[in-house]
Image (cartoon, rainbow, N blue to C red; front, side, top):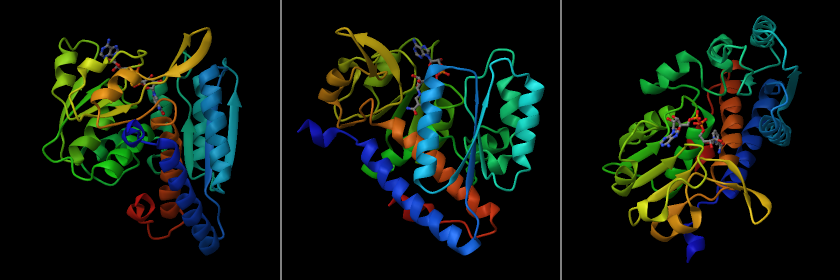
Length: 299
Ligand code: NAD
């Protein structure tokens, strides 16, 4: 019975990647050009290295070109901005991703805003953020986009539903709020200064947990029938083994939830699929083709 509750992000993301490959091939046949995604990794952060490796692997799998730039931790802000500028002007590059976090001596906001909006496949540029909040067509941050696709897959209509997001980062929490508003949910954002999180969660039909605290949300916080989307990726030691857990206590939350994403295998693979979706979307525009109908990819 619990199996029917699980939202299989791994399966859904692989189906989306297959369609991306199909539409990417169509675009290549028509234009004789291949979408290119440039990934910039600065330093040796172990988690970032794993994310970048997965992104590159999946980029190649869908038939896109992967352009990789690995820079030393000591690279200056000016050198990084110069690389971004080169990639902005490179016709072989349709999407640019600068893996976060960047070293402390580099101003991340400045670097992200240096990426031209049309190649901003992470959706972090202020222009894309403004468009998202204005309900205009834009490149949308990959993780919240992935969460919204999962929600659409299981529950087409969020009108009249209450949603709480725990976390207010620019990467997940805030864009997630914009997407949920666009889906007609009534949205609350909780964060580190919020006092009554447990009560807010208890009243909500949808929970998006994006905090970065292992298993913070307990089973008895969850309202019966709640849809739980767990964005957290936390490495902890359990029974002498290193394991990945989310921001919700999965086994306990499973009891009251109507649907729930596992960690791993929930939101994580959707993030990469959405990065490729954004790359495909912007490649159609940059190659002068009529934009691909994303709904046919997501059906
Ligand atoms: P972040 O550190 O930028 O933001 C965390 C947010 O949680 C902040 O807004 C903060 O106010 C809030 N917070 C911190 N402590 C809190 C508390 N005690 N109570 C309530 N709120 C609290 O993190 P992020 O980049 O938004 O990522 C959040 C989590 O999601 C992390 O575990 C990260 O690894 C994971 N993540 C996963 C994916 C994915 O693809 N699955 C992508 C991005 C981030």
